[in-house]
Image (tube, rainbow, N blue to C red; front, side):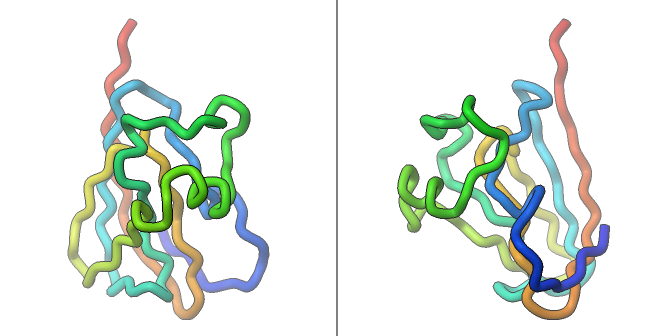
Length: 117
């Protein structure tokens, strides 16, 4: 998946959200280029897979301000890494794609989920 820099409004996965597809959901992100803070890093809220945002049933997307006020800015982690790094995340926790300010971000996303019938 390749994403390019743009100056449009935040939308879709660029807003905080949780993956509601399964109770157990893990994604792996493999960066195919170096990703710094301007390169749209994967952003995750520490502890949010256990401590649900109070409004998480009201909407599917949340603003930075909503998440910062609930979890605190110190719990929001931008995952920067060099090409070839593999990042695992429990995406039932609050997360988003960072905004790409210059260049592009190329990565492979692999997901694993368990469904109970």
